[in-house]
Length: 431
Image (cartoon, rainbow, N blue to C red; front, top):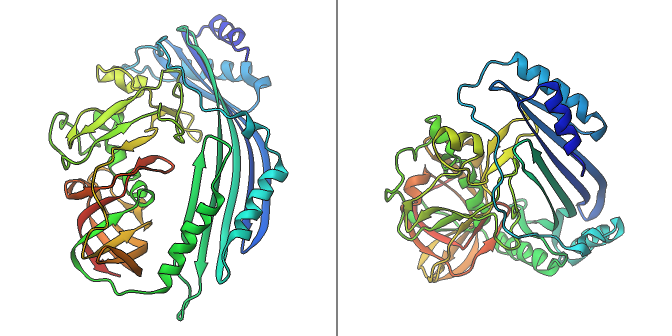
């Protein structure tokens, strides 16, 4: 992609620095509802972000059309001149060495609309009798990223994703079961559709056998899909460097401290093979790199984009992200990896197993306080999942992560978190 001419155009206008970031997505998405294909969408979208600086005055611009790129640069120049000086501004990122990594499968690019429709239809057809395929989806995506700036960065990469999910419900004597989800996201073409459907169907069957939940301090096993929802609105906001600098992080000043259970080791790993957010560089051209966040319960690092890292006297960890609504550069985790343990998770006399939370979005990101409904939730008796139940847990994420009983032996890949099952001691309450 030829963007160097635009850099020269910006310099001629009078910009001291200029950065152009291009993100292109090519998507085929097919949805199903109540056992029928309901929607097919094929779209290619281009998002172009421009950042320009004049005498420490920063301007942002956005366009969807390359034909208007010079016009956008001109508007960025005008807005930068009109803005107040940013006393914290230093400069745009500079060239660093990149890891040789690419999550791209040419077979995904060859997939037709008809093939994606067939995938969605197969999910419907695989659903057992007596269970309703409330929703399902099949999606193939090709992504391209380009970044260039006046400090010498000029980098590109492309990636592919193939994903499908099945959301199933079943009838009970009094109504319907909770919705149960089976999902897989991969950077390669092959999907295990039978596993996607059977995992959700098995949960529906268990949910039909309704068990009574109790209150008190209990063993609760949390699936990575549920844990991801909770962490995204609590812990993962506190490990962002910009929130630390702003005084909005509970973890400020705790680097080197034993904050969590010694069983917990967590890494932000954009180089993780087949991860959803695996990438060569972030959204301002900085090389992606592994960052140890928590080691044996000790807080080791925060995540930084280039701007906030320089304010704090740190180095960017390659976690910049573009907010398409605001047009600004923010900080975001990539693949959060929790290391496996060596323990048998379900070896308990009585407890619960949670695969989804409702209400995680209402958690307090600064204090870590949360109150969520566990749905779907299951009763565990003598090491076996015996039926479904609905209950609540509430508390503080930092207390929860101190009270880890055991961590499982096998990682499960989610959208943002790659983690084993984890068993906690936590207070439960009936809904």
